[in-house]
Length: 220
Image 1 (cartoon, rainbow, N blue to C red):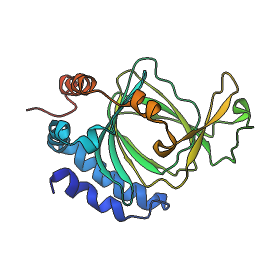
Image 2 (image 1 turned 90 degrees about the horizontal axis):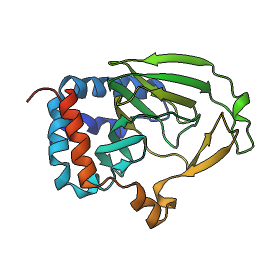
Image 3 (image 1 turned 90 degrees about the vertical axis):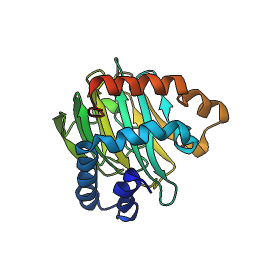
């Protein structure tokens, strides 16, 4: 067991439906990881030797996700999110509760509340109940039922801890087009869909190079 496993292990046993407990436990872990970037650096350096983690890393046009820790039972993961230029988010909820801490950059965070959602919802009528800025050092936790959206500064980096999935799908809404649709977990994806989003080793090396350049991983 290395430092990453030791720090994160306790989060596998908290009540992920109790968002107060999630915030309290995860904020301490996220703060420890942010204060000791060598732990994250060591895991990133070792990731090419851990195909079970590297194969979970994902690349999209506007977002990269690097998986640092994954425990299938109960289903806790730690990820780095790197928001790319052009990133905007559509209101959505999640299949799991999670906590996050901003390591670089910032984003505007819109909270719509615990709305009753189905694909017939009119996104334009979904009111913003809270808008807040998430700068470096901010941490927060969200219950899986919370509908939210973010607009990120290019190359913002966050450290995320997500809990066990409690449902098979989540709803995504586009406030500009008025469209809504369900998105499903990896178990429902085709092999082609999974392969299309899987991060290549070349992309992984490029992104970790950025993290090094930006000083997110501390100094060597």
